[in-house]
Image (cartoon, rainbow, N blue to C red; front, top):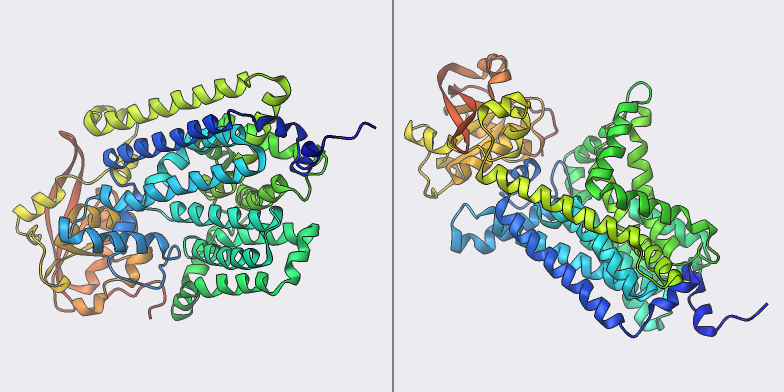
Amino acid sequence: MTPQPSHLAAFQETGWSTSTLLRTDNSAAILRAAVWVIMAGTVMRLGLAALLDPGLDEAYAMAVATQWQLSWFDHPPMAFWWVKAMREIAGPFFGADVPVLVLRLPFVLAFTITSLVMLDLTHRRWGARAGLWMVLALSLAPFFVVSAGSWLVPDGPLVLFLSLTAWLLDRILFSEPTPAIERSLWLAAGLTLGLAGLSKYHAALFAVGAAVFILATPHRRHLLKPTAWGGVLLAGFVVSPVLVWNVQHDWVSFQFQSSRGLGSGGPDWSALARSVVGQMAYLGPWTLIAALAATIALPSARGTRAGPAAFLAALGLPSIILFTAVPLWGGDALPHWQMPGWLFLLPILGHAIASREARRRQPHRAARIFAVTAAAVLAVAIVAVALLRYAPPSSALIARFGLNTFLEESVTWRGLADTLFERGLLSASTPVITAHDRSLVVAFHWVEASRLAEALGSRATVSVLGNDPRGFAFLADQAAWIGRDVLFVGRPRTFARNLRSAAAHFTRIDRQPPVAVQIGDEVLFKAEVAIGRNLISPDPLPYPRR
């Protein structure tokens, strides 16, 4: 057998030995192109951050991140801390109601850093062209462009700290650092993994994947070093605020999140189909299929089972497999749950495309077509969003296509605050001295409360009276409202029934004329309004209190 050149043998463990051919003299130019793609993506995401109304989860984050807490009902605290911190920083310039664009800035910046970290990781292992393809796939995936890339949701901080942890572990496992540097890398990895745990519970699956890979490969020798366990201990210490908060509240957050994956009955095949189709929509069908194919091909590539590609697959596959399988036992399955896992398959996809290009000595035609198609689809979606904001559909069109519920939960409830203020039912728009001086507004569901809190801003304190208050249950204490009047506002479909249930808590309830909520110049719906006179007793909340 003809011996391989040493420079090829050095990269044999990465999978495709031809990847060395990608390390050409024009690698600097390719890297510059990748960085330009990232910068262009940042500009685009800033534009979207200025254009888009807060999504429902963003409105919720804005509503509940009004005070410092160790953690929150739905998620660990990181995203909520970022929102609260931006309010503190920008408050002197904008007042009590900081614009959503300003609140989104750290999330936009975080994803730019994520992209650069993943580019460096991919380039270090497989060359500049693999890094460029990874960046293109990442920058054209709708979920990463919009949700993880700019929204006030936990996914942005999560993918930032997970990518940093993967970058650090990659250095430890595959770069043979000096003992002093390795000690620092383990501690840094423990810190970033802990910060990921403060962002979203998904970090646990990342940790499981990393642990399984290390234990199942010769890399297990690293676990004989005390500094590796020092990193593990540091991660546990960093994430401890989540544990402390849950101890104080009878583990309510863990109970809530785990219950979402517990099903009753047999497999829900329609939910499974929705999960798969949803992942294709969030990532792009071409990207998902190609990334999955590249990952499946790994075992057939010589010398990859302990290499960087297998490591990234181990980080990404647990969340993809687990959350995709949830409908098989009848549980909920939201397609964005799998997205942090797909992040770590994109370098494998970039590697596969670049390797094929190297073998054929020409650009990969299908990959270029996919990239152009993805860019076109994304451009069409952005135009559609702009039209929705500046040329919203008529009420007749909304009714014809059944868009009412979607729009009620997806756009700001415009016109509500001004009308309530004109009727004397709402505090002035200028900030008041204390929260006690604000109007007390009650919704019957966390979705409506989120939109109300966003629309009313500092004019009102919003709470929920009902069986699904989410994080609102741990903010305003309704017992402190005894003897006060409260304002009920809600969507018309269930308002009357919920109001009857609330009547026992008040001396009486006075119905008020409804208020039009607008989209453009059209009426989206008419919000029902009532005044609860003299709160007698608070609503018993369904979650444990402190």
